[in-house]
Length: 252
Image 1 (cartoon, rainbow, N blue to C red):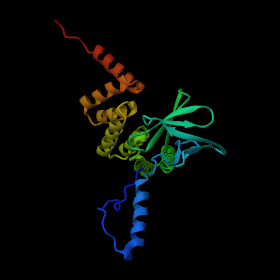
Image 2 (cartoon, one colour):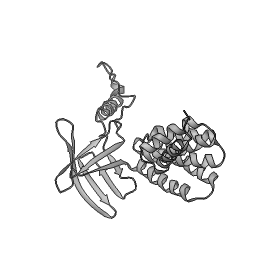
Image 3 (cartoon, one colour):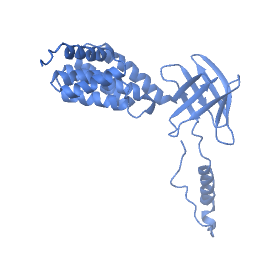
Image 4 (cartoon, helix red, strand yellow):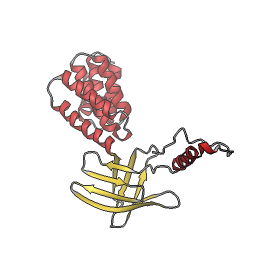
């Protein structure tokens, strides 16, 4: 993160009274330090769900910790601003997102590892544990509360849209079971908006629409879910075709 202190504002050079010389020298030193901007990489990064941590320092050194094993190395940027990490086995290409919130490391060109700020990754880890509690618990009211906590933890983390979508979907199921159908439809809709390929959310919303007699909306969602490979929706489509075929024909 680049720091811009409000006091970093230059004024014209002029005559300074002797009595204020010490204060002015301090101000010059402070302004000089403001010009040295913090490297946005500096600090700790972690892979959510794994004990893999990268620590960047402003002197160009870094360390990687995997469980209890630590490896030291260096990082640099080339003339075009491309980022490279060297942990003793050759340089690896890395990329910092425009927001400065995500760091992607190309591990030997085969695997892309996503790191988040350590504090952010801890939120994701916490959300995963709470999500599992919501999934395992048998009480809908408790599940709704747990999924709501997951949603609040993940909302501002761009890389977690998929998990956020599943939290909305599961909360929608619980709201539907509690009879709050309008809120359930809203949650299914949010899940779909976050992850348009989440087949189960289309399927759940289709079933709800069908249960309240909204056949056209149900059919549309069933078709979309079937296109995405959702087996219950494919079965529904097949059953509808059979029903159409079994209808008595019109006599001439």
